[in-house]
Image (tube, rainbow over all chains, first blue to last red):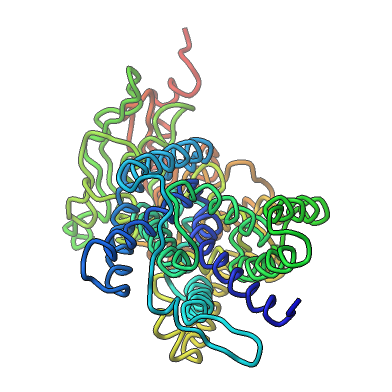
Amino acid sequence: MNVAQQAINGLVIGSGYACVALGWTILLGAARLVNFAHGQMYMLAAFICWFILTRSGIGYPLAAAISIVAMALLGVGMQLMMGRLVMTQNLTSLMIVTLGFGYILQGVAGLLFGGAPHTITTELVQQKIQFGDVWFTSQELLIFVVTLILYGVVWLVLQRTRQGAIIRSVAEDPKLAQLFGIDSRSVYIAIFVLEAVLVALAAVLVAPRTPILTSMGFEEVIITFVIVVLGGIGNVGGALIVGMLLGLFTSFFGALVTPAYTTAAIFAVLLAFLIAKPEGLRTR
Amino acid sequence: MMAAQQKPPILRVEGLGVRYGALTALAEMSWSVRDGEILGIIGPNGAGKSSCFAALTNSVSHAGDVYLAGEAVSSLATNELAKRGVRRTFQQNSFFGELTVLENMLSVLVGNHSASLATSVFMPWRQMAIRERGIAIAEAVLERFGIPLTYYDRLPGEIPYGAQRLLSIALAYGEGPRVLLLDEPAAGIGGTDMQHLLDVLLDLKRTGTPLVVIEHHMDLIMTIADRIVVIETGRLLAEGTPAEIQANPAVLDAYLGHAE
């Protein structure tokens, strides 16, 4: 086994995981909202990008941008529909509603795009970067770098800016925040749009690595859930670390044992971790 | 005196009405509060006192009009009113339970004492200076409301009840509202805490913050209020100075029952 190569694969897989999980980390941690349609939104963003690339002459960057804008609009629509549930922090109903919304997205995508696997082809996936006996693609480098930048920016916004402080108080108590002059409804819409944009960005970056299927949403939301919970619900730094570790685990487990049982093994790790440390990586 | 009479009241409500289904919680309610004045609102439980606050901050749908310094503001959302300086507290404590006392105070000051993303990224030293200044102001407000320094890093739930009540008022006060609405600030406190609260309220009045205070504690409200409005079953029963209210037969009737 080439340990260095497996480590690089692990970091690439891990930054992909972390990138996909970022939107939900903010949603759950900073705003106490859940979105079980997260995985299907990932799927839909990937398919919109694929559709544009295959049916028009538009290049990858622009197709990706269109896909992100489309998801942002979808995010606004979802949040407007769920507005009342969100203001009353009715998490159980939100869970069911978003889960249902996810299956609707999956059904619609199935009708539009069919059940066969497709691939998003980008030039960056074909560009190999070689160092001695290890290699990775330009796309993988892009995923890694963009993920680190996104986490840095999000951490800065949440910890060091007015918007971050406003989001924290809305997360604590949206009705009380209104009495302190904060427009909680708009803040929720903004957070949800951010979630949609981040998951779309993750999709157009990560999805080109593997074939895409309209049924892949569930797998994505499960991995995201594991990262968010292990990271310590809403702990941005924690999610990044857990995402990377999970990627390394996936890579080495696949190489040393078998790739077939990776998901099961990930859940075994989740169980063991939560039994030992129920609060995850959360500090307070 | 003449000049004060000519200026519009800082807050005036006119014909406020609130219905919860078939129940009329409040009807035809009108009162006003002037600069530097404390208006007391008293009445039996369920009389509609808190509905007054809910209606005028637009937290419930209601009839009637609200004027802030003469300007009609009935259609403004709760947060818009708060931005314009109409701040309230609740019978229950109103703070963020999972933020420390100091973080609570900072979150209230967020509009004026926080940095933009650009500042945080490109001028981190400025962001730190803004934060330091915000902390200084937050500490000054907490100190003014008599919340001891040793509580700043605690969660609100961990500090004594009297201090929690004062924290709720301090948060509503923020950097100085145009009018402060307090819903039973003395609920559940007594002894030295009560004296402390009295001092804080009189200090607010002295420094020019008009207050509307709903209170069951008669000693407190009769001591601090300039005028008192009595509400019974959602309607205005009487209005006047504390002395007038204490001598009003209709009020005595409502509070003590009919001597039949």
